[in-house]
Structures are given as structure tokens and as C-alpha cells.
Length: 139
Ligand SMILES: [Fe+2]
Image (tube, rainbow, N blue to C red; front, side, top):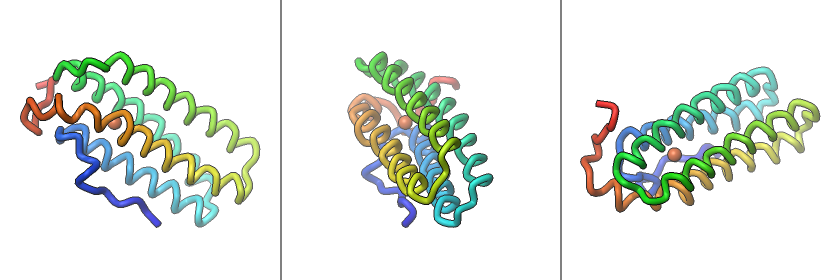
């Protein structure tokens, strides 16, 4: 079952919400590759997730600092940990691709996203609320 976007996931900033919606789409794509045992397609999707994830984390840290979020440094460290855990899992999966590993991987990706959005990002909401949802520190 694909994960659906819910309004409760919104941090109150359009830039970050759009990124999260796209990350969710990539993870749904990865899950569909896993279900259909399309290993080469999965590798490409995970590559996309790694790149998009990293650029999202940079954008998000920029917004977090611009709105004065006091735990921006902590956010940066947890982003590093998320990048590393994804890289490690990709390595492990590349060496031992089995349907069981695929199932574990689908669970890992969901947790990865939920851990990031729910636990790390939603606490920023009160700081985001002081600005317009269209706030973009780059413009
Ligand atoms: Fe995020």
C-alpha cells in the first residue's frame, strides 16, 4: 500500500511540504519496484532518493535557521545520520538481494521517512507558523 500524504504531515512551509510530498512519491516508487522485483529500477530510484534527500535536507536546514528554529544544529546531525543509514542499507542490499531483504527494505524506507518527517520536522511547526507558508529564504 502506498503511503498517502496527510495534512498532519504539513510543517507549515510550502517548500518543505512539497519536498516531503516528493520524497513520499519516491519511496512509493521504490516500494512498487520491490513488490515487482525490479531490482535495476529500484537501484535507480534509490539513487534518486539519495540525491533528492540530500538537497532536501540542505533546503530544510536553510529554512530552519532562517525562521530561528533553536534545534537547527540537531536537525543537521540527524540528517547526517539519515544519509548514512540510507547509504549503509543500499550497500547491504546490493550484496544480498533476496525477497526477504526487499521486505525489510520497504519497512526501512517507511521508517526512514516517518522518522524524518514526524519526529524531526514537525517540531519546527511553531517556528514556521511565524512566517507565511510561502516563506523561502532564498528569494
Ligand atoms: Fe524534511
